[in-house]
Length: 92
Image 1 (tube, helix red, strand yellow):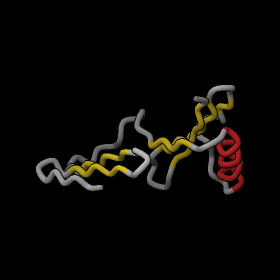
Image 2 (image 1 turned 60 degrees about the vertical axis):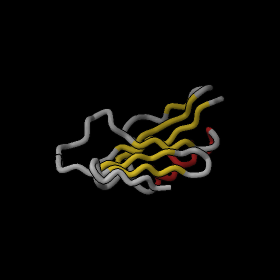
Image 3 (image 1 turned 135 degrees about the horizontal axis):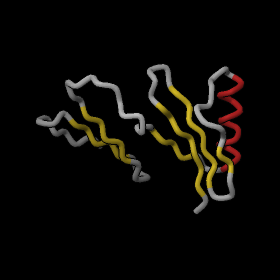
């Protein structure tokens, strides 16, 4: 679903499961803050482990070591534009 807000040039995208993504167009092209990242939750801890192995096998460096604890598995990579992407699993 898109909800246009022309004055702010924003788009809200939500899927049937409740995922929400907010995009905003602005004229300021300054770099993103260092804390900014996009996070993607994977269904299982093993999925996170396999994804980390896959990216490393493709020559993509993990920006931090794989965090693999009892309640959280996560790692971060950088996309070609320099945005940080975090893949993670959390116990419920």
